[in-house]
Image 1 (cartoon, rainbow, N blue to C red):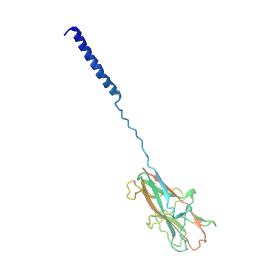
Image 2 (tube, rainbow, N blue to C red):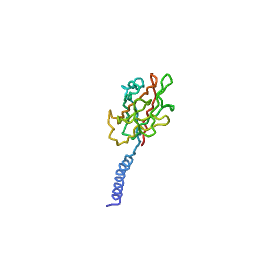
Image 3 (cartoon, helix red, strand yellow):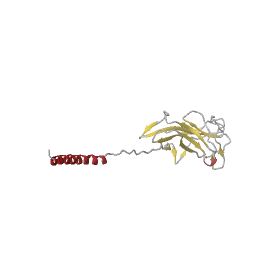
Image 4 (cartoon, rainbow, N blue to C red):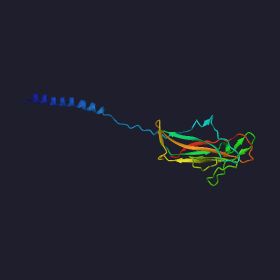
Length: 198
């Protein structure tokens, strides 16, 4: 081969490499880079009471005859959320007043609950609540709050309703009256709070 043809051959190889190198270089810029985007959705819960049992926010107890067993009524407390979440349902009296007061300034006190559990018996002036029909009555604390139920996220009581996780608690309230208690309407206010414990 003459010197001229060798020069052409070398140029041909160089030109071929140049053409081959352009797509490789361009391809390297098109390689996708993966990025993970991450967030945490917190558990959220809400609380509601059975509206069929409550008239304008008031649970009306059955009539109380003096000296007889409790006049009572029950409502369903529903806690729901985006997942089964450990929580505690607490009860308290607003402003430290756990009395059922009448318009004549007489009152029915909450059950003395120092021992933890008591029975609501006729013939005494007392009122309180029981949980899930256990038959054990508790007094609403005058100060602070008290656990009604504590639920774990793996508790078998959770059900699914409309894509929400739901837990229900039956809460009954009752009152008794001694023979000397004046006739009239007596009422108290309670606050129910569901707080996550995770």
